[in-house]
Each structure stands twice: as structure tokens, then as C-alpha cells.
Length: 190
Picture 1 (spheres, rainbow, N blue to C red):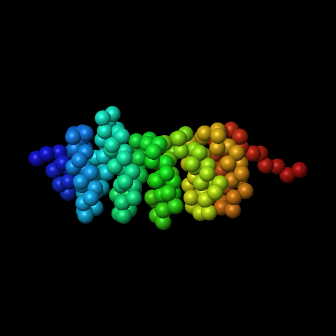
Picture 2 (cartoon, rainbow, N blue to C red):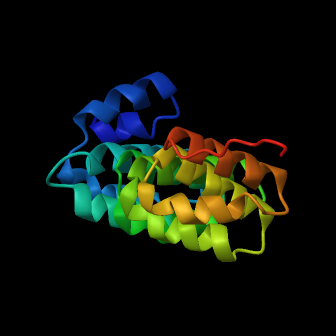
Picture 3 (cartoon, helix red, strand yellow):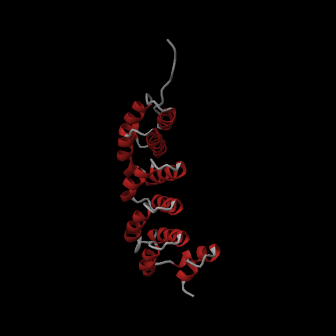
């Protein structure tokens, strides 16, 4: 049996073990598996692509395919793809991850924010724009949280401005970020 037979066997233990043997030669079959009508097959294909994206000879192509999986109609497959893009620290994933900050599933939005945190500084400018301009409190809160945890000093002006946001969550993460960067405010009554 080939590694891909194990990967798509329906047996999670066999599938997980098969991930260690994934290499660039499997890429065409993994791309085909993403077109499957079976959610489990697509999910394991995403997991294998994530493993492949960590290898020097598969990073670019696997990441490009993972970007397309980030729009999968199934939330579990989409979540796995967003998580993998963060683990790969793929700067080219910033735009789809920002889009996912507004996902109707708060879990998926959180996974997207965590992925942006993993990407780090390459995501800061886009996160600042989202914090300053997005109409959705959920997106702004996720952006503020990501900026707080990335800790890039260039976000300080946007985080100070966010202290006046209508959303308490945005305010919380703005304050948290400023504290983490050592520029928090001291409140006092004169």
C-alpha cells in the first residue's frame, strides 16, 4: 500500500503515520484530493500539504495550494488550512487570513488571528489597517489581539488610538498590547 493509501484510508492512526513519508512527489495527488467530495479526504490532504510546506522543496507550491484550501466550504478543512498557513509562517497568506478574521465561526476567526500572530511582522501593516478601518468589532478585536501578541513597535500608534474603540474587547487587547510593549498608560484622577 502506498503512503497516500494510508493517508486516505479513513483510519486516523494510519493517516497520521503516513504524514512522515510525504514528499514533493505526492503533490499532484494531494491537489487532486482537495477536489474530493469527501471532507475527511480533503482534511488529510491539507494536513499532508502542511507537512510538505515545511520541506524546502515543497514550500512554495504547497503553500499556494493551502491558500486555495483556506476557502474550502467545509469549516474543518478551512480551519486546518488556516492553521497550516500560520504554522508555515507564509506572508502570502496574510490577505486570506485577514478575511477569515470576520468568519461567522468565532473559532475559525481565532485560528486565523493565531496564524497571523505566527506570521508576525509581515502581517502588522495589514492588521493595523484592519484595526483602524474595519467596521466589524470582531475583526478589530482579533486584529488588536494579534497586534498585542506580535508586539511590533510600529503598531503602537494604532493601539493607542484603539483605546477609544467602542468595543471593550478591542480596548482590552489594545491596552494589553501597549502593556506588553512597555508603553501602557497609567490612569489617575487629578
